[in-house]
Image 1 (spheres, rainbow, N blue to C red):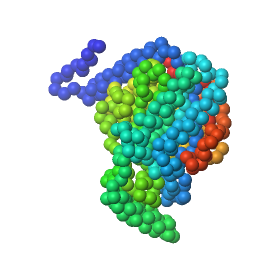
Image 2: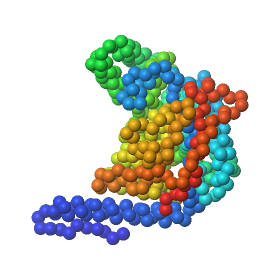
Image 3: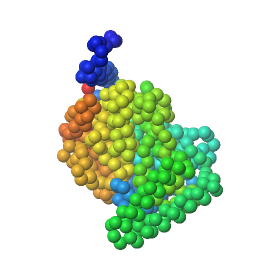
Image 4: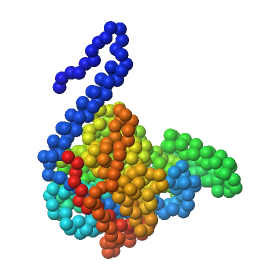
Length: 457
């Protein structure tokens, strides 16, 4: 490639010349990336995509809330799951298998077409167990890996490797994994001390009669949880496992790791000695200094390729905070044209300022918490297809990017309603002999299938 230089002026280079040259270089690189990636996808077998969502509630059994849990508030409740974490994981994957089978039957018109990629998504937190996170290797059979990357990963691959799923991408919500086998007595004692203070604060908040006092106490609560997360007693990871059979770039699939912890991620009350609660856990630091292009299947990065198609995935709060959008502003390598922008969440919808898909690109979200589109959100129900579940506990959402974001001009992407896309819905039918109420607090939700849409060129 020819080297582009700025002509020297006597004394100091004019600022406008520097800025114009920087913009030209940025646009030139971005244009070349678009041409390279577009020519790659045009030669690949997948020309269109069918999105499928298992819109299943993944929240804990809720016993109340402090403030607004969908905003600056906290979830009070208890996790749902089996006592045996290995059995819990296995039975959840049986549910995934049943959801995939049901989705396959719904996709009767497209499922055999080798030019159509079928993407099935599950919400965040589907895999977490009765304590809020699966402990490290001790619970899962003695390897040095965590739950879904070891035994669960093998089961997902066995499911997805069936011949009928030759052209299906499985986006498996997220698994919550602890870095320890069990908490020490010292950690449990500290966690209990924190919880005693927390519960006293919550009691005072609930007893307060006026808004001024409530705001004062809520501010104390907010400072307490902020301190707890910056001085966490335990580290857990929130990871999404993605797999497709015969994936040339990533034969064993990829793992995406969440960066930002929200007040909805863990219950407020440390109600037993093994529970992962708001006051004792945090996610590990995610280093984005080297961008977001995936280099290793298990790194934290969020942009990856599938048979020439460029995908990006964000988990819940990472999307609201614009994790990928912010990194792409400063890291040229990450600023590749994105064909599919996927979001798995529990309390989130597509956020237009955070969309990174290119012009013509598609954005899809599968959520496990609420069913009504938020007021004043963009894209709204006029610029996206919104499908809420009848139980009010989950949704899916699809939009098309009519004009991609322009960071040089600080312009967000513009989204529009997908054309000629219809949605089929069906209540989830759990397999016989499996009690879904022991695994999910609010039932099995629905399967949503969005009809075939062309991939961007």
